[in-house]
Length: 510
View 1 (tube, rainbow, N blue to C red):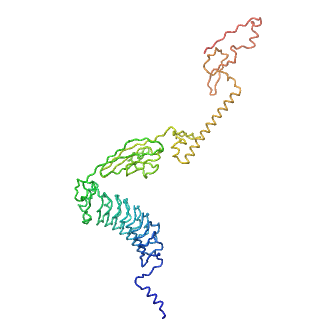
View 2 (cartoon, helix red, strand yellow):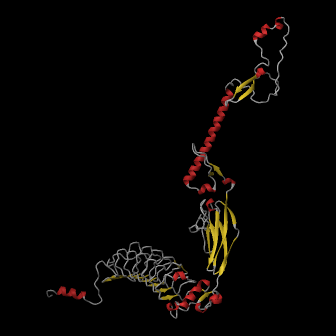
View 3 (tube, rainbow, N blue to C red):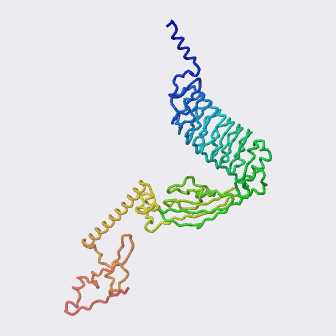
C-alpha cells in the first residue's frame, strides 16, 4: 500500500454521506450531531444520562418516560428546543425546567398530565411556544403560567378541562394564540381572558357550553370586537345547555334568554347532638340553575373582645376526624370519630352564577355520665385549677395524647394515695384517743343542756377552749355541796350526835 493510504482511507470514510460524525459522550442508541441529540422511539423509561451539556435541540418523543427526575435536566442549560411529546408523563414537579432559561419551545403533547402545579414552568423566561394538547387536564388553577411572560402560543386543545380559574392565565401578556377547543368547558369568565392583552387567535369550539347568564358577556364581547380573534369555524360556539337552547349558536341567542336561577339551600335538621366517637353525615340540598356548587365550612369563633368577622372556612380535605371537612360534590358533610373539638357552628353555602345562599348548622357533642370529667388535685403552693380531668375510660381521654394521658393517670393515682393516707391517719388518731387516759375535764359536759338534773355553782367551772372562747362547764365528779373538812369538825350538831341539816343550796335550772 502506498504511503499515506491509511490517512486517505480514513478521510474518505468520514466524508461518506448518511454517516454523520458521532459526538463524544453521546448516550447509547442515540444519534448526536452538531448541537442536536435524537433519542426518539427508543422505548426509554427515563431521560438517558450522558447528553452533552452543549445540546440545543433534544428529541425524546415516542418513548415511555413517566417522570422527569429532579435535576436530570440541570446540566442542559443551553437547550433551545425540547420535544417530550407522546410519552407517559403523569406530573411535572415544581422547578423541573428551572435551568432551561434559554428554552424557546417545549412540546408535552400526548402525555398523561392530569394537573399542572404552580411553579411547574418556573425558569422558562424565554419560552415562546408550549404544547400541552392531548393530555388529561381537568382544571387550570390560578397563576399556573405566571412565569411565562414571553409565551406567544399556548396549545391546550383535546384535554378534559372543565374549570378555568379567573387567574389561571395571569402573566401571559405576550400570548397571541390560545387554543381551548375540544375540552369540557361549560363556561368561562371575563376575568380569565382579561390578562391576554396581545391575543390575536382564540379557539373555543367543541365545548359543551352552558348558555346562561354567566356566558352573556362572551356573546356581547364577540359581537363588539372579539370577532377579529375568531375564524369562521371558531365563531360556531354552540350551546349544549339548557335543552331549549341546545345546538343553537351563542351569537344567535338573545341576551334575555341567557338566564340563571339563584340557589336555595335546605338542611334538615338545623341542630344535631352527637356522641363522642360517632360518625356524622349531614345532607345539604341545593337547587338552582346552573347547578349550585355546595361547600361546607366551620364557622371560626372570633377571640373574646375582637370584632366579629365573616365566617372563615377551615382549610383541609375530608379525612378521619377532620374538622369542618367540606364536600363540594354531593353536598354532604362528613365527620368521623367525633370529639369535643367538632362541636360548634357550621355553614352550608350554595353558589352559582345567579348568586349565593347560606344555611347555618349547629353541632352539639354529648358527654355521657360515664364520661364526666373529674377535678384535678390542686398544685402545692399554686393557684387551684378548675380545669376538668377526663376519666381514663372515656372517649375524651382516649382522644388525648400519650403524654397527657400519663399525666392525668398519675394525678388520679396521687389523689387516691393522698385520700388513703388521710384515712389511715384519722384511724390511728382515734385508736390513740381510746387507749390514752382522758385529760382533766374530759368528762365535763360542753353543751348548753343541763336537763339531766340540778346543779350548783360548785359544779360550774369557767374554762376557755383552744380558740380562747369563754364557757361554763359542769363537772359531775364534784359534790353537789361544797364541804370543807374544818367546817365539819367545828359543827355543834356533829359533836352532840345530832344529825346535821344540810345547808340550803341554790339550784340552777338551765
